[in-house]
Image 1 (cartoon, rainbow, N blue to C red):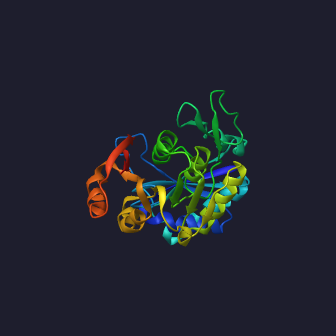
Image 2: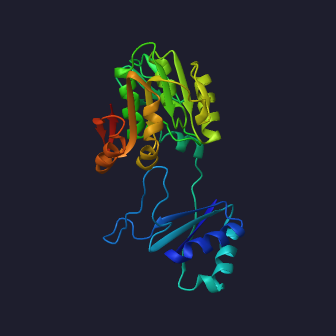
Length: 291
């Protein structure tokens, strides 16, 4: 396999990327051409939200081709196009053969939630001290246990969930929180999401972990719950305030995550008419808020 690396301006990234794919590139990725220099530019957004820009002011496009000839021909064809003006070819180089599946898997290690609750990918052995193990692999739906918000929610569930509780996981993603609740003693767990792929993933993950949860679209959520947990983002959490609070049983708990530290006051204000929220946990700039 060979890679063709190009240098181009931010506004050229999209059109050149499309041209590379049309020229049979196996994949095209974008990197900051000024990375690890004084001109390096931060470019990121909140989880689940689009980044503010799709490329850097000076970007490297890295296209993979099956062989050297294909990469060279693509470079030659691009260099005579009007839209390639000011762009340049950096190099064409062979990419060492690797086991890409194993390389990807190596990035995901077992995640400790509490001393006895762990999230463990299927290709890893569970740690000896793990009494409860959620087996979950990275997939289409958000929630592999590695993100701070997921870890805080699972930690709260493991430490505070009352045995026999009825639980609602609103915006369930992979279903990891619903699965964790079922493992920690909930007798009924409803896991809902607006994304049908997430609903399917949650049900499949529950079956793989030998727990029972009820999955579906948001209308599945009915009645009152001892615990309502929503790990999404601040903007939808504000809109959902009356709905989520309306499902919390007397004496029950509301647990919210996906909130940055700077967003605490706006969330408290959005929920003030329904309940009082406080920060129960913090991790890496994110907060967990509960009633």
